[in-house]
Image 1: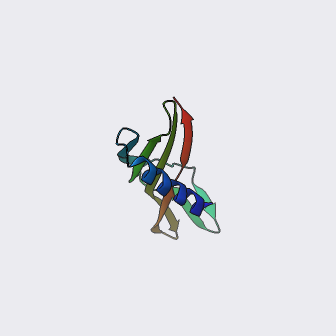
Image 2 (image 1 turned 180 degrees about the vertical axis):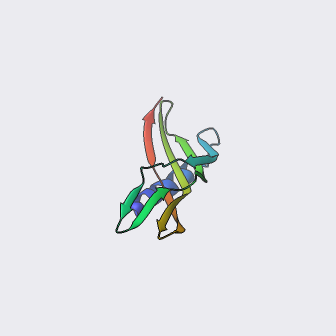
Image 3 (image 1 turned 120 degrees about the vertical axis):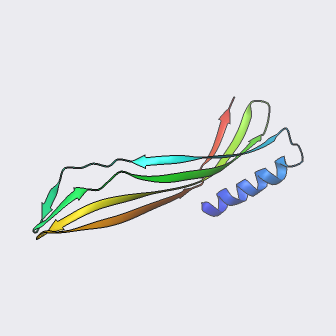
Length: 113
């Protein structure tokens, strides 16, 4: 499926590059803040609490190909990451556990105007 989407993306860029009016390229991005508060939990003598709010970022490349006057094919390549922190306290000692999540997506949309 991924290979098919990649081939479709390459074909749409190649087909649309002959006419600049039909192919649109754009960049997008931004910052995201993760506030993931949860009630403290105790497991086997260790108390887990939510850490501080962290920031991440996301960025993307957008390709849009107008197939006809009312029909378009749009593809995006999106990358995002965010860091989380969890505090683990046991016997007077507190440790912070850092978790990093990364996401890479390549959705393709076919739509009407």
